[in-house]
Amino acid sequence: MSFKLKFKDIDEKRELKENFTIKDLLNELELSSQTTVAKQNGEITVEDSIINEDDEIQLIQIIYGG
Image (cartoon, rainbow, N blue to C red; front, side, top):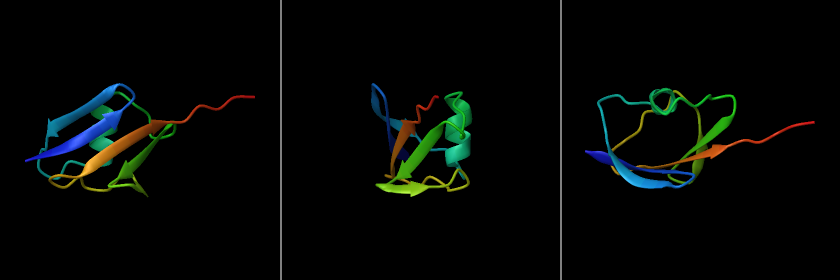
């Protein structure tokens, strides 16, 4: 079982662990949910969403400043 991850220069298939969530993925990549938006199959999703087989997960880093 696997899913597709797109983030910056990353465009790869990754192995899917059981009950693996967006939050787990962010933690694995050492990213903050406060500065990263996740899209699951083209739709914005929350960090508690479970990643399913063949899902496409796109992570978008938010840049903000004053």
